[in-house]
Length: 436
Ligand code: CTP
Image 1 (cartoon, rainbow, N blue to C red):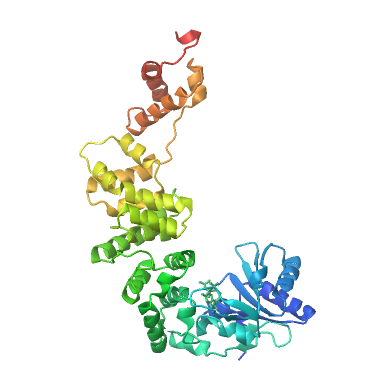
Image 2 (image 1 turned 180 degrees about the vertical axis):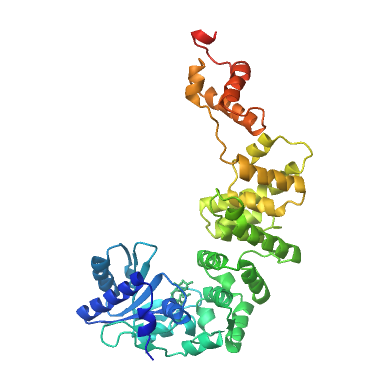
């Protein structure tokens, strides 16, 4: 079989990368292949902006030469003999020297050695990710499928290549579930048994947490993260994140609401930025754990500062804020002050959690009308009114802003009148001559 026709139908910029790589391979007299997820998606007819290339030879030298042809930004990983070339339009070329891998102990990173393309394909996770196509100009598109990946694609199967696969690299357990969800596939019977054995041995609990974190985030970024969590719950549980995480039916409902909120956020509030949907799903998953445990998770998994802040702030404040929002009487400016320091992710979570209509209305009002609201006046107007600039300006303008949010003032004239009426007394300004 030959993938030439399918490859030729790829978008022009991707085809050009492949053809130029093939021409370079000829020039350097090395055999070069597109491999892995890229070939899988070519066969499935799905877009994939990451071109995975394997060079039977010096991958680093190939990558340097390719950079001279295509431009872009090249990052080399000499130890693994791999490189990543980032190009315009989110295109990326992953270049590797064909290699074999040996695992000295389960869960540790493998020892890497030179190998043939077959060795390189055999070290991979699943048959559907272990296909390749030759891209040198003679025989362009020649298809290599040593492990029956194409058949598994047709049968919608996720199948490991050997029995130790999950034990050697437990992140593959999460990958298997991710691909199941993404493509609507299922692990075939023997792979399921191997998965169950690795789950029984709690292999995911034993590997380094940042690898688990990265894989989990990729899973939560997929289209149906809640389905994925359901599957993880069924086949493994969440001990690899923290004991005590339970997917109760009320939590499932909450997660579903959150998933919908995240996807409709930009539609409902068109001026807001898109949410980090994976993060809010993750935050919701941790609901019910005590604060200390959540802090430990942030630390152990080395979440970035920003992510940790968002994770912790929701768990710290949500109960208090929900109670506050459900008060009978509440000035809009007070809601504004509570919400201003919060991230959209945290606000979306609160929105999904509140039950009372009045609280929901207040959140809507904040997001639609008040977040990002600005005054018609600024410091120059205050100077014109005779105030001497200083830190009190900010306080004065904030007061006017709150008045505007509470509809006490409407327009520029109203804002100026408000300053004239209230500004002097509350801020003890130093006045210049004409307003004395
Ligand atoms: N791979 C593997 N074991 C892993 C991770 C990756 O064998 N734990 C191999 C697979 O062959 C995979 C390739 O490396 O196809 C590239 O990895 P990655 O880019 O993470 O995955 P993709 O399959 O391209 O998946 P995605 O579409 O999510 O990018």
